[in-house]
Length: 508
Ligand SMILES: [Zn+2]
Figure (cartoon, rainbow, N blue to C red):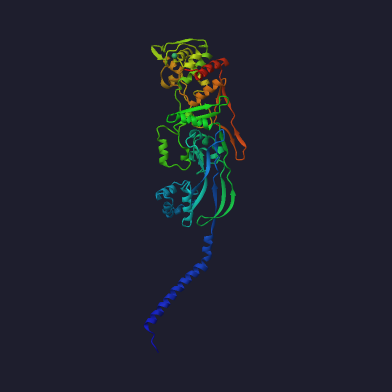
């Protein structure tokens, strides 16, 4: 009998081993494919029903001629779907490379998530090339989706920014305060201006999409759609052309300008300088950008037309004149001599020039301080304050945008209480020319002028004329409101108007 060569034995052993290994492997495979295959198949096919929120496009804000000052456009956001935040460590290096942002930025965004069912916004409003890159790499990016969402856009940038306002993510405080209005975390809400005061019309109602997603969060099937209801369009009473020329005139200065229709109180123009670009707030604003705006000493977010008050100066002479006539301290024929100022007690109060003999019309026309010092002293500070309050100073006008201040109408009682000091005669004289403690907003003074022009009606001003829903139905219309009728006789207003008219129309 031939001996089996040892190499063959080795080969045989090797073959046997190999066979054994193969058998084990096959066995495992059999186990995997046949025995547990059902389970794997089931898991890969496992689907979950998920509700996806669909943002409602926010309504437009338009000027009185229908030009859109605030509108919405479609933006593409890269998100990590809710519940997939465990994938962040794996995804962030890949996404960082694709999007060209630091990894820490992605981790920071993931960490700042408000609630477990909210998506993580990795990048917002990305451009087409980024979108394409992400789309190409989708198989490597489980849990990453591209979301299309409407995004706020202000075509005119800084124009009318204070009036229009801006939007931002709803805060915890707002959620608490507006609980009954159906706001949810992650919602956008108007923060200032018309965006805020008309938010209930502008925001619309979000829709829902019921989708079936697989284990990787990919949408398999859409089960049902409850479409969002778009927000309504808000038409301002503002004229964009007027607004832009006022802003041009204010450029580089701090100040405000208001013009209104004296018949209705509709605001035609309301400009405040310096301004800001509300587009900065249309996405989640970066902390350093926010700090730069807030830290600016010129307070660009403040609407100076309603939110800042200061002594009005000569414009107040209208009220001093009205008080003089109403309380009988002067008549239109009363002549006061202006030698370039006058003494009150021992102090000399200057006029800006020597006016000589001055009656009421000339005093208004030439803005003679001496005349109004004298009228104020004859009327007294209490009655001057009373007339100022009748004209609406010292109270909010009730305009339909937030952030309004009251200003201040001082009188001796106020001074005793606040400053623990008596009132001096010189203060009465200063009061008469709109100086001293008196503080008014530009809007309040515009209403004073309007009341003189319209026969003594103190109006409630408004900036929104109407609101129109997506089907074109008018769902809100401004109703002009007379807050108060001044007790001034028509002839009194007529004399004041003549003086004001001559300011503008006489040479010199
Ligand atoms: Zn004078």
